[in-house]
Length: 252
Ligand code: NDP
Ligand code: 8X3
Image 1 (tube, protein in one colour):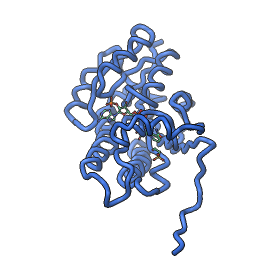
Image 2 (tube, helix red, strand yellow):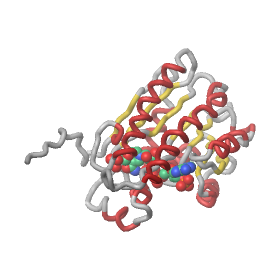
Image 3 (cartoon, rainbow, N blue to C red):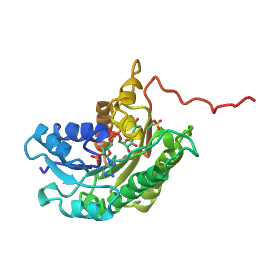
Image 4 (tube, rainbow, N blue to C red):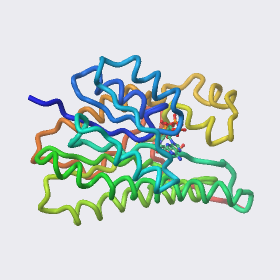
């Protein structure tokens, strides 16, 4: 029997890298995408022979997405699961202390990149038939507002709602759609968000037990391998040390 195939966006780091490794080491084939070619090559070298196809892709560039998908070789088609994971936050400050350019990059990556990959991947997912799945990475930031969340949080609220819209549009097809919405996780996310502050990325998690990339890989594995008649619409995940608290009161 042919092996199932997962396409992972943002496979060069964090959730995406851990998920790509987990699937490749457990009998799936993986189409691994991202901008950093050397990291894609490292991932491929670490995984079982023939299990990974690397496709360099910039989520902010529609032509790059179309070209990468067109270049997926026959032996990595059809695709059973699309893990729409690539994305980022840029900036931690509340308005008006924001950089407009950061907002543009977040919208182009987290929103336009995700919808474009989805559209271009639909024929490959449809061809996989029963059991196909799209897993979109949202965030608790899409449900819980906080100062400095602004466009990042709004982009993840988009991911949640777009996932539900897709469920409607794909009704009657074999494709499941899940919005996966994690809270605090230790990846390179905060380094990227702070424009490269590796120190903050270390100290932020000191003394805490955040979600780890391997935790996410296990959950994506669970979702992708559910019986084909089941669909998790949304899955919100927090580490135990994070709580969904009541809205803040400002007393004068
Ligand atoms: P990382 O920074 O570790 O990984 C982000 C991945 O996204 C990288 O592989 C990066 O690849 C890719 N990416 C970013 N921009 C682009 C682009 N323009 N084109 C292609 N790929 C891109 O962070 P995480 O693993 O934490 O992030 C993964 C997802 O999880 C994101 O969508 C994030 O918003 C979400 N998330 C993270 C949480 C956290 O606390 N860490 C919590 C909730 C959600 P490359 O740079 O090589 O292109
Ligand atoms: C990342 C989670 O709370 O840092 O999506 O915005 S949070």
